[in-house]
Image (cartoon, rainbow, N blue to C red; front, side, top):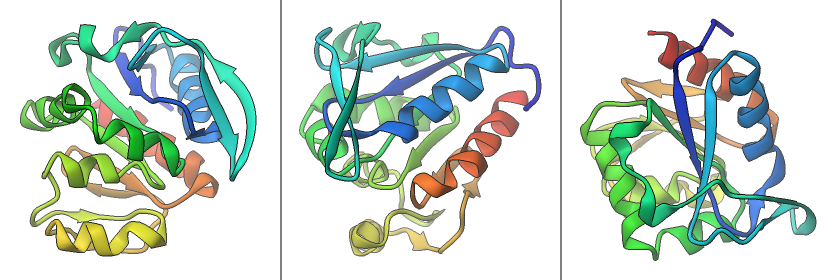
Length: 178
């Protein structure tokens, strides 16, 4: 990954995120020099999962309500079934997705994370991928759904599952490097 010094990336998550879909981008982006900030509805530690099993807890840095998209260079949306299903009912979280998209900043969503893109109505006419069970939702939201490890359509980056984390991170790094 290119040197990302001076870049700040927001990862937005809540309880039920898929562990490697948050920790993988956080580690790789940090190692490349980016500052990574985790936003959640509260400052309480959030619970990771591997499939359905609880694993580690992660401490958020900031509450979603305190985030201004203008302070960040990219947005990462991890999956897990519970996490995006919870966040898509939070209007501030959904508006943040719209704000990043309107600013044409990289928006990267993996696995079930694209549910946030559906809720924010930013998929119309765009190519994207996801976990198979939400692809109908994406098509209904106007996406051209493909089956690729890391699908890039302009500033929108999507991936299918935890196995795609290396390709997902590489695509985010390329988008941030310019």
